Image 1: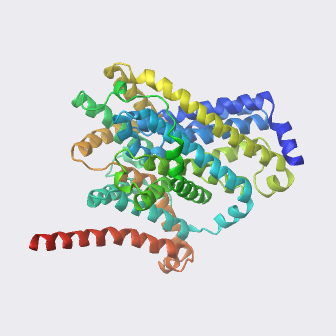
Image 2: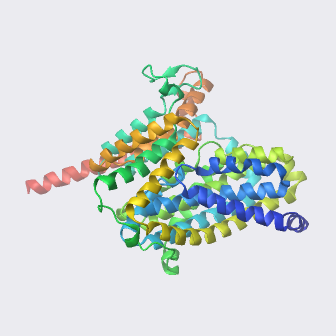
Length: 499
């Protein structure tokens, strides 16, 4: 009780609350803008912390960190463009709902799911941070590689009906991450003698090109082919209480998976999102409707990626090990302010840790309100004439692709990806598998090589890992089950024709 009172006295000042509100609002806006993302939003805010108190700096950054992932869902639903990579799976069901005139309900589901994921992971953070942080350290390169491999294999479930196309897309995504300089050896790979490709490719330009720019080009080539904002019923509408209660299992599954994967350093929300979406494809009572505008898909994506934020804070605050890129920047700010996460924070500054819990809670509440407000703003924007709207999307897309590294090459990559995205749309090829491959390709290769080095070049080091082995078994099941189902279906059809 004394710790809670001390935390309230330390973190309930007007300056701290104002910093938290500003951070939460900026995080939501940054998430909505294609290409901005959590890390960029935090870095932009970094200079403002130098003249701020420790409490205000933490409040500002925790507000940004908690809400930025949610912001990406709004643009994913309304303009078929995930504002952040973590919202890539939200497109699969969010945009179809918007096209069906249920954009307000889709935003409502995304907001409720994000809030549920954030609060669930916060509860776990409060109850079990020190213990779970120690458990996460037990996950070595082999175990994390196994989880990433499992996430990549989820392409087989996400591409049901076009599994070959999906797996091809995933392989292309993995290959794209090998272009450029090898971080381990320094050698240049697949540059084809081009200086432009020596720096490699990054996820954001490819993501923006495939989704946002291809949307603009496709609408320009086929005007009137897509649903306009005026027919989407843009706004904010909460789902019926009975609908939310009936889907409690989907919420629990998504929150649990997101928190668990968030705890593991280096995995990230992309892996959690697609693993959870695959679980929904397998276990949801409405699994046949996923990909056509089903709320269970929004729950799987948004509850899990927001649960990752709380999960990633567990190793960050308890051990001083950043769980993802966002917590890496947060860790740097806390260190600059004289707060050292880890044993010292838990034992000698418990009021600071408790204050962080309180700020995460308030940030999630602000996020809920910010979602309602931003949806109303988008309603006005999407009612603008379509040529003007497409011009705005084009401008934000190109700016978003450029600001990540400040490299003009990323603009070229974005445009090429946009053209390829149009071709994929026309050919009915799924774009999500390519994004999954690019998003997870870097960590896939990194953990594979770390594991091989640790085992001195032997693959048995992966198989003998007690944590990795059951995950590999689950991955094999994911691969084999669709093949067996397809074969049984073919045999049944053959017998039916014979009769």
